[in-house]
Image (cartoon, rainbow, N blue to C red):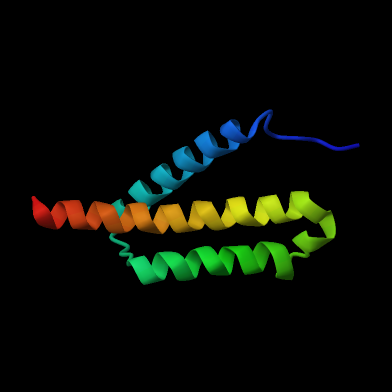
Amino acid sequence: MLHYSYRTFSDVLVKIDRYSTASAQQAFVQGRRASIPGALGHGFWAFVKTYLLKAGFLDGRYGLALAIANAQVSYYRHLKLWQLWQSQHQS
């Protein structure tokens, strides 16, 4: 039996945006920093961890989609954190 957490891909994108924003704001309050190269590295590592180390490839295209979504959340979180620091320094 398959269980789908989202009805549409648009639902996934909304959740990615919401989670990455909340996580970036929390990291900003904690004083964590980010950079663009770091955002790329974290996104790549999230993909590798989900798809290869956690054997997402065994789930076929659904495993690939999940690995990409996890990579996007990580990338966007770090990019948004970097953007928060940039906006603070411009103020």
